[in-house]
Structure formats: structure tokens, C-alpha cells
Image 1 (cartoon, rainbow, N blue to C red):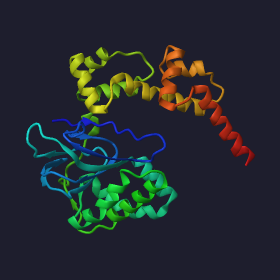
Image 2 (image 1 turned 120 degrees about the horizontal axis):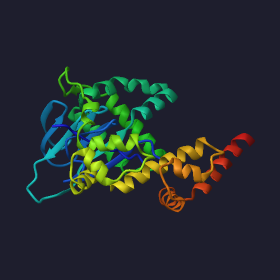
Image 3 (image 1 turned 45 degrees about the vertical axis):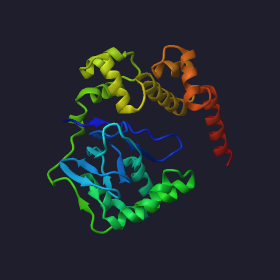
Length: 294
């Protein structure tokens, strides 16, 4: 069975994603993503799946999974029952940790545990007890405190003893193969054709599903409707153009980002960024002027 792609949304102004969830939850499924993930079980018992590994978990289970390594934790709870807090999760990209290491060479000390995570790294009960209060505070923290707690967490994991790798030595995740299936194929199409017109029916056909089934699956994959997902990607592209093409008229940026209506473009930009495209550009210009003056 091919895993689903989980689209990890790291919010603007944050370096990584830290969050908690209950059970059942829409991300609790056989899935993968290009980000590293620290996964800590707070409540319930059950079975967990990492690559070709299957094991039993209980509260305190702490695992670091590497990029594109499929995983899932399935809790044993009665049908119809729910758990308000099942686990806490931290997700961060390869680019983030590489850039952080370039700026802070001391982070090179975490390279070994990151390498082990490509096979799934299971930590001891003692390490999980050290990490638990840090994770609990991290999911609620803001500002510089988030960074301090993240560094503390990475330090705990990097210095851990008795780390066990989970998948077999021969197991290699195949994200290109995963992406050829179902909704993953549609997501790849969106990324390759973001500025071109396409409909939900077009994507459903690519995924080999009915429009209604595709719509449900897409929301489960991304946590949002197709229109919201596409608008977010297109506005992010518009921001990149506003930052890199200072002389490009905003109307041209509107069309280059895949919109064919300037009013809709302005409305979507305001919704997502809290300001108009012209205001966004003006603030960028102020920032550049301040740097020159300094």
C-alpha cells in the first residue's frame, strides 16, 4: 500500500512546526513527508508502523523519523471513542537544519542522530522522560523561547544512548514511487502547473477518482480544500515575485502567479498576508532603504 503525502504547513514567521493532536485525527494514516518528524506518544497504546517495521507502542514512545520515511501510529481505542491528547509532534525541514548548522557549527553534533532517523530512531524511556516536558512547553511557546526549546530538544536527542533503528538496513523509501499514486499524483501536477488553469475535475481524473472522492481525499491530505491550497501556493509565488522583481507591475505579477482577475488576486493576497500587494512591496522597499542607510 502506497503512503499518502502529508503537506506540512510551516507558518510564516516560524522555522518549524510544533503541535499536538488527539485521536482520531486526519493525519493518523500511513503517510510520508519530506520533513524530519519528532513524534511523542502521550496517551493510548497500539501498533506503529515505520517503513518496513511494525511494533507496539505505549505512552512515552518517542521516535524521530527522517525525510520521506512512511509512518503511522494506530491507537487501540473503542469504536466511536476519542482521546483529546494522543501525542505531540515537531516537524522541521532539511533546509532549516542545514541552514541552522551553517550558522551554528555546534549543531553538527546532531548529524549522527539525523542520519539514524532515516531508518526511524526509537529512543529509550529515559530519553523520552527528558524530552517530554520540553515538548509539552514547545508546542505552546512563542518567539525566541521556541528556538531555545527546539535546541534543547535536539541536544537531548543527540546525546541519547541506546537509540534503536527501526527499519531494516535494506529498506529505502521511494518518494518518487509514492508520488505516482492517487492524490499524490494530483499534488505533483499542481506544483508543476501552478500558474495554469485547471479544475477539481481535472485533478480528480489525474488521481483516478470521482470528483467527490477526490475532494474528500484532498482535504484529508492537506487539511484544506483545493481552492484554499492553490491560493496559498499562488500567493506565496506572488510574494517571491514581489521580493525579486522590483520593477514588475503588480498586474503582471497577478497573471504570473496564475490569477486572471486583479480584484480576486488583491482579495486573496489581503486574506493571506494581511495587507495589499502594493503595501507588501512598499514595506519591502522601506526595509531595503533602511539597510542602505545603515
